[in-house]
Image (cartoon, rainbow, N blue to C red):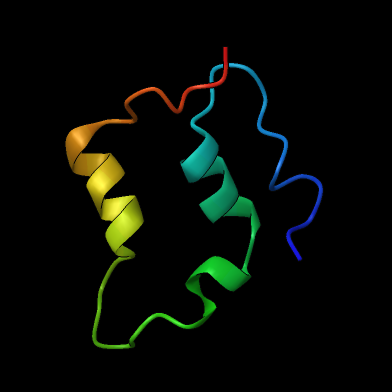
Length: 54
């Protein structure tokens, strides 16, 4: 289960990026041959869309 900090991003932060930064389990099962998380890489390349907390 996600920790409280991971599920409550502050205003101005992206919900997905915040969750990925503070919930260790998200990246725990990544394939070691991958250099970056596909979800994180997508946000770095394409922006955050409507996921910013207002």
